[in-house]
Length: 461
Ligand code: ARG
Image (cartoon, rainbow, N blue to C red):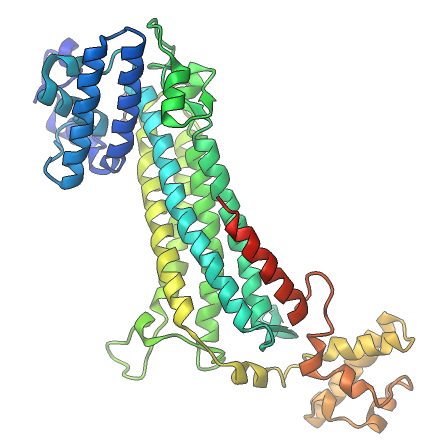
């Protein structure tokens, strides 16, 4: 088929040129946005008298039919046409004849693709936001059922201090809430300024009403520099960054699920439906999904770096390099969406082995800080209390005992400040509840937070 831009060429392009140059295999994802953008452009051309109102109507009706036909699957896109923009325009001309050729008046594919891509990023951000919101609700529900369920907290993956499952889960809530806000920003930014009307790079002589097009497409305003309009991909980079960060959070969560699901820890058990077996070892039940989410995080970092690198040396304004912006975005979008979906199912169905986590807290001197704090409350400066407690830990290690198994005589040997009430002060089941300052793990604090977060989620847009 001859090219829409074939006029100045005396020879057909090489087959390899067409193949290498094309983006239709992936930018067809944006067919809806392309049609939406063209309908707004044609409506404005009609309003401004650049084309007749009848022609505008014909174009819009034709485009709507094409949309319907693509969605029904009754239209095959032509893979020999470079991209989705040329496909839609060519389908339109086939459908409505001569008037179809007027659609591209006052427009370049450079401002068209930038507009479509912004609309696309807006739409896919919405899909991710929907999943993130469901995940936030799930985390609150789970946290609520484990408000008093103790588990060891770690630093350096060494037993540190006791927390609760609720506190642990709410930590992830904070991360995903930040992700939610990050995608809200991306979504807002993508529709802040309309590129259409910038033409190839220097605007156009037609009396376009760019504000009208912005209104029709839901943009807040219009790009105030035509060169920036066609060369800006910051919004795509912002999207890729938000994707990389949410995957980093999911990956950390998955890493812990993998560790806690191991027979050595056994704090949780993954549901059979969300694990897989080994082809050789009959006993195996592997956390493949959690590992895959952790693994796929890498490609979302790669996608971000890929686009940053593509953009870094480009002279103004449009360069074909920028066609390379689509695949990373589509790939990160699909990776994040699928990971969020599968993660929720896996997390929802996993079983918490509360007894096992409680048992693990008996080792590793998890209440050592509370021994030191007890001494401080009885008048010892903290640094001295820290040293005394360290000596007690060595003594316990040598005797193979826990601190709570020492008697008052033994403790008094280390400091005269110990009294009988030390045993209740370092009781593992109590020390979480006494950490009831803002940010602490006590059930009272977290219960209030869950109520507050439930209200916040209701008002999320
Ligand atoms: N397929 C192209 C892209 O995605 C559309 C814009 C092409 N513009 C051009 N002057 N070749 O970037």
